[in-house]
Image (cartoon, rainbow, N blue to C red; front, side, top):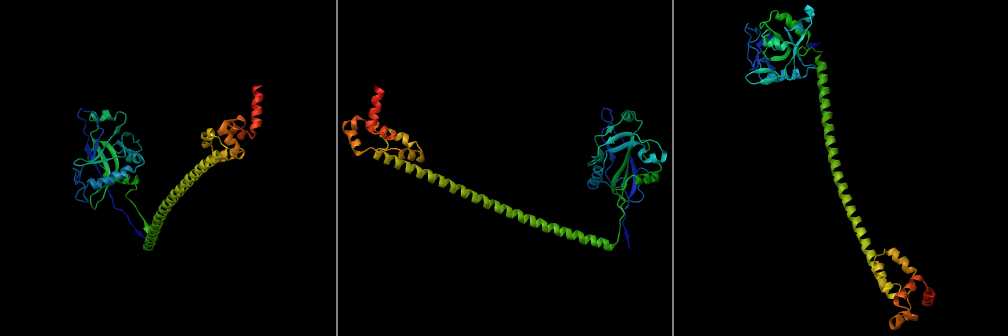
Length: 330
């Protein structure tokens, strides 16, 4: 057996006098409804003790206003609700942004109202004195539920409220909800909902676990990278130290066997190990006799140690070097 669930609502209208600015100008704010509990001068409401409106109740009204697709229209004498009945146009007197405000001690307030055309003159000249809000309320509690329509009017106690209520119901569906569903269908939906919640919880836990694993692996990777970088730096430094040591040994050996002259030492120490090795492989050592001759009488055949080193570098004998020098001098 299907069950029908309906939210019970009632419609009411209340008009409050517009208050001009201190300099007599048109107001850009207007009190829509006073704080509750409140009643109309004609005795309404008759189905509950009073209409109720406080900060908590107003929050729901403000939320519904914010969900509207368009700004709230202020018309003349609620013509936007009567136009289908009388066939007349519903002209805008002004517009209220979808941001109503609750103010303690004052109630529900429309702010930043923009008036259209000559409406401002109609208000300041008192041709229209009241702003009227039509609203849904709960007959069980009297709580205001939603603002339906706002209008400028000169009739605070509206005539034909029941007809207006019927028209208002045709223009909104926010508080009339019907659902035809069997208990079995409701139970099935509940089970499905609970299952989805469990799946969501499991997926959330799995995601959190994966995020923890990713963080741990990232930290491990960063640690390994730092270790590898340190090892690589040590290898490079060790290689440079070894090459420097080998270069020093090679220079000393070349100085000892005559492949390098003392004057060549600064140059040799600036070379790479490979470059110096290649140079020394092509050089010939000075003979012991040539060394002794260089010490005793300025070098074999009269050559100095520097000239003998040049012979070594060029791969020629002292005689060939001396002969080449003689030809240059001739």
